[in-house]
Image (cartoon, rainbow, N blue to C red):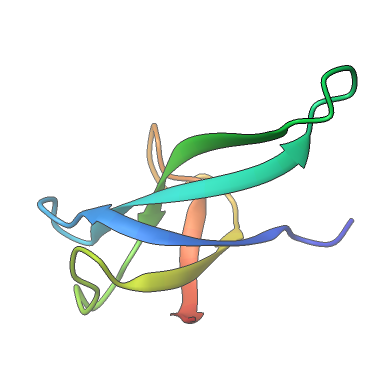
Length: 77
């Protein structure tokens, strides 16, 4: 099964080798036909601590690195 790749904005870089990425998705409501925005935060592994708050990044699924980290940063989008 291929690994998922998502793009989002870095919202926190306070932890060592970890960033928090806010991923937003948009879809049309099935009944009301209105565009709905939903967002979710993911914690991703940033080995070199090079990404800062506000950067747009792409993250990829990986094997669990810690209790909450299941994503790694692929490249800056």
